[in-house]
Image (cartoon, rainbow, N blue to C red; front, side, top):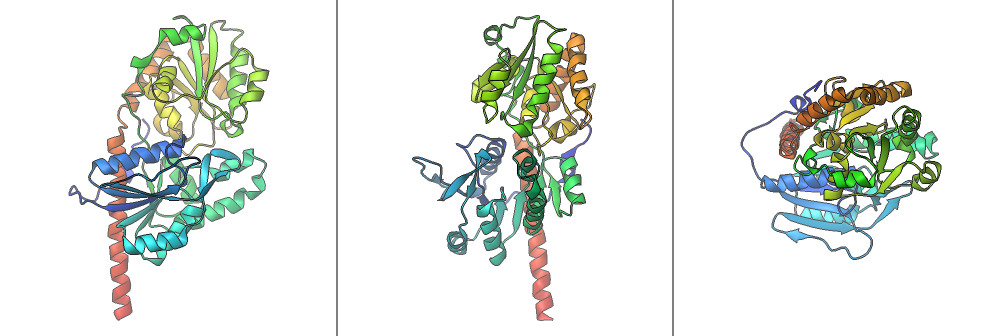
Length: 408
């Protein structure tokens, strides 16, 4: 790997005090998206370290009951789907309810994972109660706006995000590249905390010859794989264009798209030879990863891109742009192939290089798998815990300074 992002997270103490952590999020399982998945892993890990979680989230459609036990309590508020990204939700403002809740049960720290109306009301209440606050920057809404006909609003969205996150004592970002970009844009108190991967779930051990047969692929075939939302911001047209340009030279080449989204119907009509595997989760998703050969990921709107790390753990040779997780974790020619951002020809040439050199493809895939094993969720959770303790210590020092100044 090119960098060690965890070195930027201060480890405060080996002594671990149990904390009451209020977590506020617009999305959480059973929602299925990268934000919900990552946050649930962090929450489970924090519980495993002895912390108590008070989680505030929107109520899901249908029967949705708050979970309550000795180390985890949920508070459900009203919410609605984001119009252009229905896998994520906005929670409606809940300022009065949160003020009552946190005045009665004062948390040690408030962690706000999303920047919607619910997140904003949580921020205002936490500031009013003088609670330590940390946030996550997880979704590039300002970048996504360019793909949904509201590009005119991206400047306003960015201004709002900056105001939101700069009101906290710390904002966690998944890559040093994003840290640099946001710092340049005026964001403060940025801490790099990468994401983890479950290497038991995502493993080459799940490769299936039976699944490959359903794709009409044998041992000699090469399977290109994409996993993710079938949506404009994922740059899927470049993946399909690459496949269409190369299949004439490589008759055994297959392209499998795993996922669903607004582009699926049109893409299926336009590309009858592409395999649309639909939405997959759990063991089925892991099997799809492990049964492919090359992971082709052309998105340049990710803040991280969990799928890149999952593909690496599944022993796939990854071709991606020098951006987000790929830019952070891949050293081109060592454990994957990086294309220069905005250079589509580089992307296609990267795939072609692997198709022309099977031995190189296998070597890069093996090295990718080894790289992924170093990013366990326990390590990521401990880094998150370290940021919480750092924020709390800074908050105590700031409060003590304010008291001293007032007394003088």
